Amino acid sequence: MAEALNLADDRRPAQRQAALELLATLERETPFPGAARIGITGAPGVGKSTLLDALVRSLRPRGDSLAIVAVDPSSQRSGGALLGDRARVRAGANDPGVFIRSMAARDRLGGLAEATRAGVTILSAAFDRVFVETVGVGQSEVEVATLVDTLVFVASPGAGDLLQFMKAGILEEPDIFVVNKADLGALAERTASDLAGGLGLGESAGDGWTPPLLLASARDASGIEELADAITAHFAHLTDSGAIAARRRRGRAAWLIQALESRYGSFGLEQLGGPTSVEARLDEDGSGYATLAALGSEIEEALGKPR
Ligand SMILES: Nc1nc2c(ncn2[C@@H]2O[C@H](COP(=O)(O)OP(=O)(O)OP(=O)(O)O)[C@@H](O)[C@H]2O)c(=O)[nH]1
Ligand SMILES: [Mg+2]
Image (cartoon, rainbow, N blue to C red; front, side, top):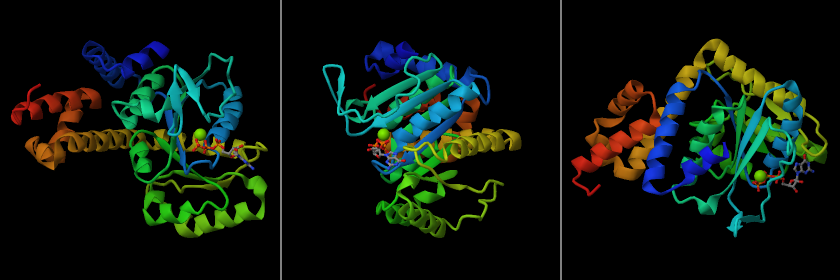
């Protein structure tokens, strides 16, 4: 795993080519639906890492192997050591059934979203569940939503940014809502009712799943079993209803179109026949990575850029 993840991070041309082939093979050949992919998002300091640690302790005894991709936007790498690493996932340190990959945002030459996606693709080939921790600062919710099967939004009491999330319409993405730090009492209940009010919870999104709103305390390990159950139930809902295939396809297509547009602009995307043609190419190929590389070369040729 570590070697594959390092290869995916390697920027040298030969290694990039090898990584592309590996990722495309994994994407096409990993048994479907394979690992459950779960995103844990929320503002800085709401307790995402602490919750993940508690989740590992709760889920691991159920028998599933677990991997975590944790993105720490604040950490700085110095001589190989992570300074100021705030990862709080300590559970499973000596357990081969738990794998944690910590990523420092500042190292990411190829982009954090891309590194995260590669990490999830690789880890999904070997673990039963893959978690991704990302700091929610607006657009990243929408980005991570294209990568995971289940998106968990974590809030904490008194977090003023809740309103900001609501305004940005980002709260439409999550499948599960958690108010962490429930040990803070009335303040947490207040946040939960604010959130419920803002969400209009109880209204199903039309896909037969009503996002639950849970209270938990990662510190006291309360509400963790309920969260683990909700995560399990959401994946079962997706697989039982068959919605998982469409969700993954949609996520992959959204990512591919966005990646092409950010690299080559809407003009470049048009050269390829627009989103519908891109999706058709993706369906034909089966790999988002391979399609991105192939379409990228085509655009560059069409635009006459040196390769
Ligand atoms: N009271 C209380 N504090 C908590 C709880 N969970 C986490 N904390 C504290 O909240 C702080 C932030 O926790 P983290 O788990 O690092 O939060 P995070 O969301 O991962 O933070 P970033 O990765 O920096 O965005 C730490 O000081 C934790 O000890 C909880 O349930 N109750
Ligand atoms: Mg964290």
